[in-house]
Figure (spheres, rainbow, N blue to C red):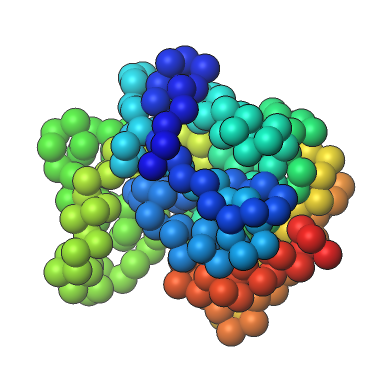
Length: 266
């Protein structure tokens, strides 16, 4: 990996591959750049692809206190090494910072592809717990990282309790526990977007094409959230990825990359 120095002096580790128009793949909570490696490889057939370790993950720095605005500065620096303009793509929780970055960075962002933003805008799914961020931070501060992951899985993602113990036997659980602090990071970004009320009308001003994709097999609340974003911003297209569910951004990189290519390159 290579590194750049963000505006506040923090080291951000990144990889760059492929050729063509630039696209930055923004990873999700509790993962470093390797979590989106499959999608990055598929996109590199048509794009210059930048992946990176977000703050608090992998080889990048993690100065405190955490501030979401600094992540936007990181993305701005990465756009610089990508040639000065780039499309952005992310899935699930990473869609929040992606929208915030696009709104802040203006014409440096050429387009967006978002896969299933976890927006909860009505009663189609229970909202995030009001004390979500505080509780995760308390567990991590007490060294209870595994408990923090379990709390997120059962109370936020709504994984049935009987599935949790088998999940703990998979090596991925240890990776999530290692990055448990990032659940609070992402929670700060997503505040106001998962509480069962309409999306804020004044948070984003974005005038580039945005695709919001929903898996054909996914829960209905993802489509409700996608339609809510389409009603809010002027250039949103809601797409369906047939036969896929919420994990497609990571587990089905080929069909996701093809949809990205079709939307951004036409």
